[in-house]
Image (tube, rainbow, N blue to C red; front, side, top):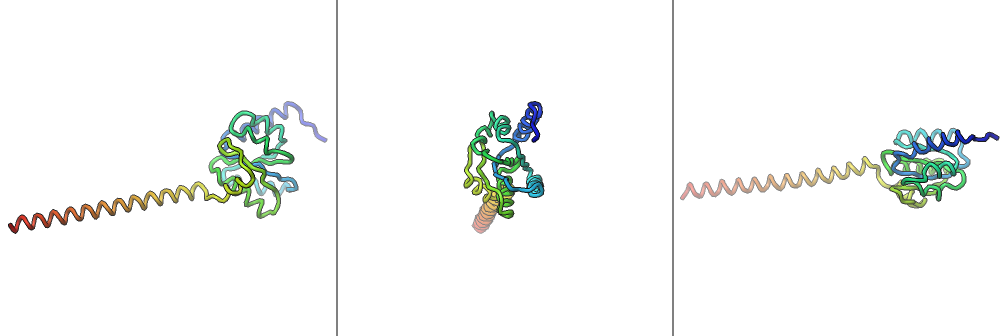
Length: 176
């Protein structure tokens, strides 16, 4: 059995603190029974989404997150745990993890932390059902664009009506 020295543990904690530093969301999952190849495949899928996964001792995770928005992660990290964090899109980290677990029919979501609030397994699965940040932004921009087009059309119509009215008044004045 390999023992971890105090210096090595401090190095791991420092690494975990960096891991959580810019994260927007953390998803805690049970990955017991996963092979190294399966975890590597999950890592690659998450890397493509600006997300990362770490497997570490729960006590070291607790020390690394004791202050900050992920302080309550220790309530979720029980037993063999992996923590998935998302750096860009809060939804994508949850979506990729839930989808991977469903495809593999292995692993379990324990919960997560978003904006300093603890989320249940159900909450994380609901979060995973949301559209990605890019899709939501496209919907918003589309709505704004259609609203702007409507306003532009109304203004054009109003200007056309004013021009028509001005022309009619000018004809009437010329006839008089």
